[in-house]
Amino acid sequence: MATRKTRERAKFLLLNLLKSFFYLALLVGLFLLFRHFSTEEQRYAWFGSIYDNTVLVMGMFVLSEILFGIIPPEVFMLWSLETASIGPYFLSIGILSVISYGAGFLNFTLGRWVRDKDWISRTRFPRLRRYMRLFEKYGGYLVVVASITPLPFSAISLLSGVGGLHPRTYLLLSLFRILRYFVYASILTGIAGL
Image: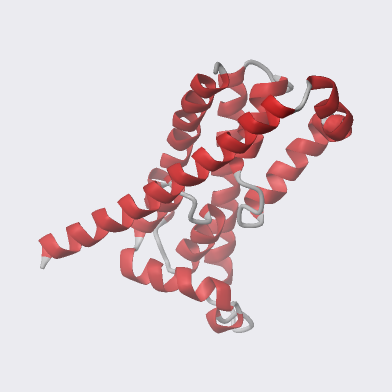
């Protein structure tokens, strides 16, 4: 029984890691194509007003991380790599990863707060029901998987709070989120040199 559960968890993690690398490869491929078929002047003309506005980009990042990852974090990693607007690349990755970690904890805390409220019901949020079933099946392991794969980290964080995961356990398991940022940053710096 335990071996079957371990195999099921490993398969779940592997499947989501493969999705993660597929999406990363797709994003990097689009980035390289865009870079190859456009000049720096063209890119600046198209995106300059956003590209150079650090406050706007960081605001979009924070909102995205709080609102269930509307924009993939890799987009912001690439922006940071291209602009160095918030400092040297790995320092900016550290800042982005801590913001993401903090946004996850904010959602976790919100989940703990709404858990016992009468006005909230898991059935009112059909999109979250799927992830709630996954949380019920995998528990804290789902936090690890969401931290390192494209599963919506903030949504899983919220559901972890609703599901009653202990805060210390959540904080330890979600440290994988910071690891993900640095692993992806290392990959992106290698690819950006192409």
